[in-house]
Image: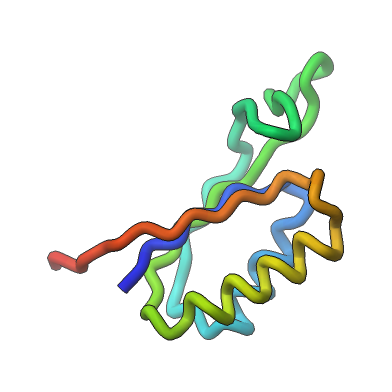
Length: 96
C-alpha cells in the first residue's frame, strides 16, 4: 500500500477529484486553504501573496500508482509545468 500526498493550486481541485474517481481511489482526505511557499512562489491568501493550495492524502493499492502518475502527468501538461502541482508517494502500512 502507498500513501499519496498531493499539493495542488486550489483552482485545480476539480481535476484532482476527477482523477481520484478515474483511478478508483477508495477515498481521500482534502485539506483546503493551505498556505506556504514553493517553486511557484508564496501563497498566503492575502494581497501580497494571493492564492492557496489544497492538500490531498490518499492510501492506495500499489497497482493504482502507475495510472495515478499517468493522470497527474496529463494534468500537469494541460495546465503547464509552472502550475502548482506536487505529488509524493510514501510507503505505508495500515495498523488498525
